[in-house]
Length: 117
Length: 114
Image (tube, rainbow over all chains, first blue to last red; front, side):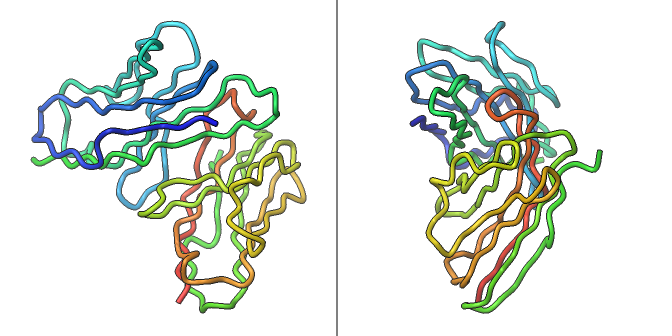
């Protein structure tokens, strides 16, 4: 079974600072990768996803992530954060193919981002 | 589309009572997922359905939890009897096809068992 590790539990940044949130996964096969965001009191929304192709993917609100297969990583980045980016960010992975017929999307524990105006 | 709809949004109940959470997936989506979110354990997949059939229920905590999907537009998650440790936010999500597409999440049901 796959697992996802997010390195930082809570990150505090000032507005305009650059952001990088780490995500590593473990799985022996091909995976699809996602970053979801959960704003305070709201449900999860998709920020970006990687299925195949260019390993640098761009998402909404200026976010991007880079898939580095050799490092099993899918780090999230944003060059300049805003106060409105305060939220919890979840990395998730799902096997691209499932011989056993089970497609379980596995989430990391999440990273809380607090942006100080 | 209205997105994934969940009801109720908040539920407060006493220990031992039966609780039923409801979900309406996005029309045309073939896969439906139930998750539980707590501070201690994060987001956990409880069960998912593909074409109304339960595929993986390995995340269901115990026999007190059951889920059904009688048709493509409705699913329930039932807890009977409920316990204080069941207090959490329960999310429903749907996708076109499991594994191939992003999942769209509902607003969640915040369950408090006293």
